[in-house]
Length: 483
View 1 (cartoon, rainbow, N blue to C red):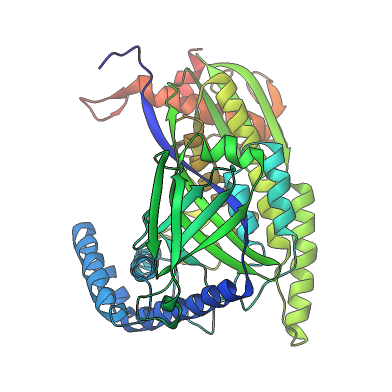
View 2 (view 1 turned 45 degrees about the vertical axis):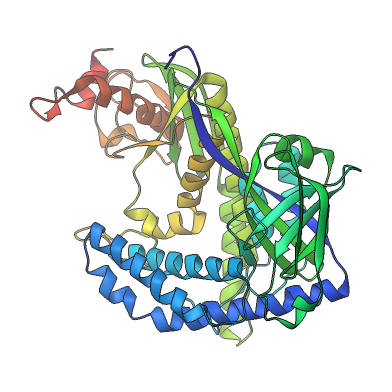
């Protein structure tokens, strides 16, 4: 392969479309949503016993066991009056739910499978999905509009299609007037809705760009509302891979996951990210141990906002009222905005993003601690501030622009080690916000200083690790002292 040709990587982004449909077609959708939900919870209840069993297996055993779960769920849904595509998505959803619950239990968290009674659909779920995929401010604003719309509690689980074909999937189509439609395989051939035939004639399959014609008694054709942005940034640049139809109080929305090919960027700098309380995040870009740029995002407003609404939530619970944590969406928005700016900076400087490994304390105050881990209220703060969400969002967004996923370094010493002289001393951290070295008097914002150390720590690991001795040639402090 010619090394001068940029290496391609695959990334996924989702676009949300408003669906226009008649009352008759809405009846078909509503019926299938209810049937699919019944099938999902019926299967989950029957498969629940697998969680404890699979949790005790090794990695290979867990993989094989999840495969067996899929086979058993397939037998459960086989006789049900569902479309083939819906059966496939139920199988995958149940297997994924069991797998994720098992993984949470393995790391010590108290996780349980959802039930019909415990299910509570987030009133901003669709908007958060759109916000997670956003890159520009226009996309952010559109996502926020969805987040702040009226709650849609009680709505059924979405319908999913994992393939792009007529007999068991969905297809994004375009007619000769440049109008866009979605074909959905919605019901089984034995359904009462199968008496009507849907005919597709000479429409363009947007995945292949070729004309397609077919007829079906198990699917429906719906028109989509979309903008030029949807067309130019998604439909014309990528391939539709999976589809999710969601019902809300204000209508039906289709979220389509598109697969993009992105030029891989080889990093030439590192961008360290420090997560905190008063400062939600601070970052510093370094090259050859020189700080190129830095920034900080205050977390005080979010902290104050969340505390206020947590108190209100507690008071409602004491009074026996149903309390909904509406403030959570506000925190999520802040996280996504911070992630977007970090990604923009990383792209500008072609950076490898580096973060502290906070996997222990980020488990949250209501989770089991890792063995021998120290108790700390900081873990509660981290859970509330949703720091793991920032980590997940950065991982996704970096890949979308061609940058590698974040690397992780141990947090030890990053907040109290001077990156000018290498002096390691707890007294260096004067206050929560101030760093001043007791040796060389170098002073700086504590969070920005820590982000610089995090960035430099990756360079230290790359240059000073001895493969023969399987240890570092010198300590991080000594390495900094040489600069």
